[in-house]
Image 1 (cartoon, one colour):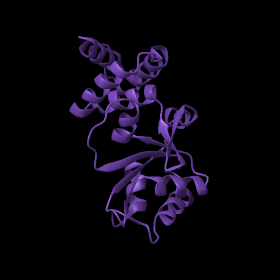
Image 2: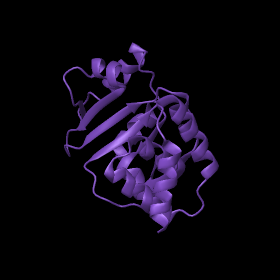
Image 3: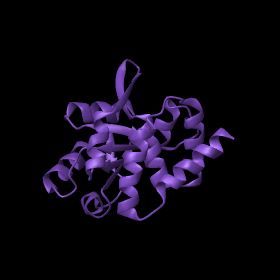
Length: 183
């Protein structure tokens, strides 16, 4: 992960580690086989997408799919592989105002003397409520138990916006997972 973070830093691309690795630094350590990162890259800009693909097409990394540019357009994702370890890295492109603002609320942790930027705990919870898979629910419950000073106003504000957009009961999910964690 350090190699990915350094490459993004050197290129001036803002990023945030999300997913299982972010859950680990916020209190829910579990097995994960990949690295998930949000990166600041406009999926509508062919030049930006090509630049990221080129950045990860070298002696250390390779695109994970045959046509990463097309995949980036369709799914806002650039999957790459670290050649030495075989680790898959999903570079998720920031497409919304929400995605872009989360870069302003990062948690920084050192790895071998190098700063790695992780999504903050509130945004991790929001992302996991949106994904809403079994492991995400487990992660949220443990994160709630390990982080007593959550900014619930912030979480509710974004969940309310996403509720209107997706027409899903996200605040109800939040309330239920909180109740389950505390029982």
